[in-house]
Length: 133
Image 1 (cartoon, rainbow, N blue to C red):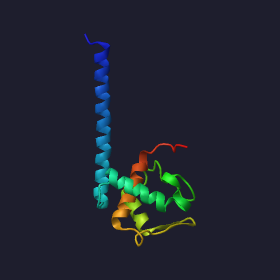
Image 2 (cartoon, helix red, strand yellow; image 1 turned 90 degrees about the horizontal axis):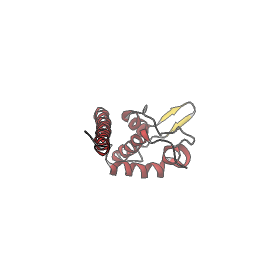
Image 3 (tube, helix red, strand yellow; image 1 turned 45 degrees about the vertical axis):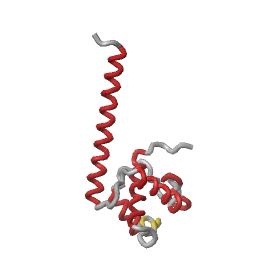
Image 4 (cartoon, rainbow, N blue to C red; image 1 turned 135 degrees about the vertical axis):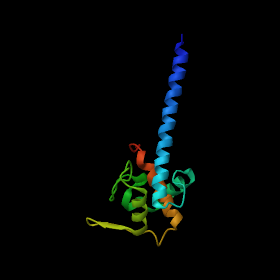
């Protein structure tokens, strides 16, 4: 007969296994999406995400997207799984004009690697949750 401690240990082990499987699946999905978009860096790499965070909060927050991708004059970029890796890279590089709003092209101001780091950061915001105040 299993003790309560054994049951809890088994339950915890199953929960950890399911969580790890979900993370691996999400990483696999991101890897596929990145490969299809011709990504030049590892989008899940913490260094790339941190570099993108620094670039974003230095270049994109004051007037447009707000700190940490919260809505300002431009749309919020948090919890946006509708923005594909390819779309993010394209719009950051070439800009966009839509409904009287203009997103400037950054390809002349940022290196290719920096644009991909911004993409890595924005992809990391897909499951960002609510903004802490």
